[in-house]
Image (cartoon, rainbow, N blue to C red; front, side, top):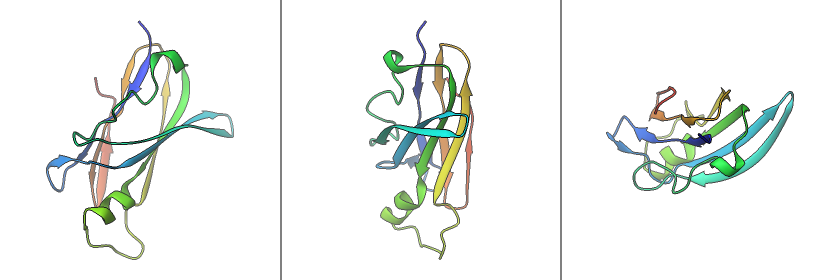
Length: 117
């Protein structure tokens, strides 16, 4: 089985997928952080393609950066100065060639994540 990476962002405050949320993927190697890709979520809160497809998959440490503040501003969530949640970095390891699904459950004042399926 080849490995690959996906995500799904749900806006738990509004009870719907988070459409148009920018996500960046980085590979972490020691103190080096390499940008691999920038995507945005579709109307289902998913990306139109795998974030890290099987052809590009390598085990190691990665970081997904979710640009929550831009999303919250765009949907009209009242802004604080500064906004409580702006950029959400999630650093995680992928140790085997399998499907890694890293969803984000988001509200203006909190978030959670887990390894999904």
